[in-house]
Image 1 (cartoon, one colour):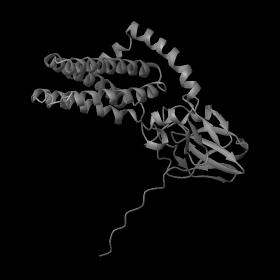
Image 2 (image 1 turned 90 degrees about the horizontal axis):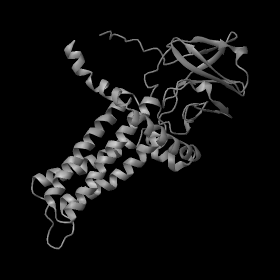
Image 3 (image 1 turned 180 degrees about the vertical axis):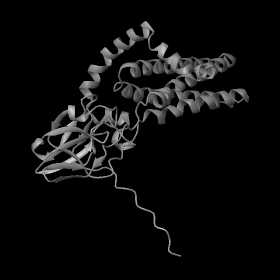
Image 4 (image 1 turned 60 degrees about the vertical axis):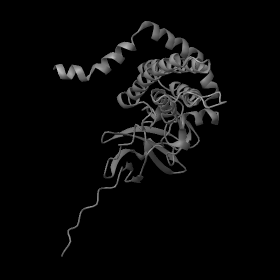
Length: 308
């Protein structure tokens, strides 16, 4: 029992953090300021690029977050090795150069993080805000450290640089919890494969031309759509955040996710507009004996023993 409590400390700690009244108030205020701006520009390609979207295949923010951590870790190592002294005539020493590069990288990381935070919800959003506040504090400390180095106060710069890296690593831990513990920004349908046989989904007459409907087939949520007499089937669970797509609006041959407004093509599951990073899996569909039937992955091939 004691071991279980020790291994669950991080979940309890972060759950307690999300209940802090000041964090909830700040989250509400930040949401009220950011959400209208994001809603206005969500269709802008630049916003989708900030997410990473269909072009990258996953969020851009985690990849960029490695840069300031790497630069500032190297800064601390150079400080420990005594390599924070500028060469003759140089304004920046090696440690200061890496510190400044990390600050520049942190600005790009913050922009992508803000974009991802805008499409999070509830507890995830509060944890994400805490993650951002820690990163902001780490960047501020690094900026003061750089200023101290440039003014000749190398000992102060070293101490502030080490403090900045400590806070930034703590922020990275919280970010890891969002992905690993909260499954934020992961493909929600990556493991969906069944059913492995043709299964009746809905009566043919119950799916009108141009309509969509959501059905559950052997535990899998499936969205059905009829267009020009052809039936299409994709996963009904949005790959981005798990909303049911059949509750969204149909626009031609596309469906708009009701949660974060990603747009998917109903014929092949491709992403028409983010913030989703992963397309919707497509299921084979057919009409047979008055029923629309669907199937997931093909049955696994039977192994054949060699006759030798």
